[in-house]
Length: 60
Image (cartoon, rainbow, N blue to C red):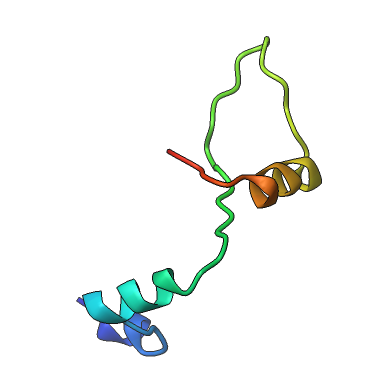
């Protein structure tokens, strides 16, 4: 495996990851590669961001 592709990447321990996520107030996730059926409404990026930022909880 070519390790040069990992040169500038930062890896976190489980403890660091937990500490970082505990400090987050809100997280925004934008779905990708999603199939949308005709009866679903398609939101643009600003609408999705507003919905997600106003949410108290988001479950996937």
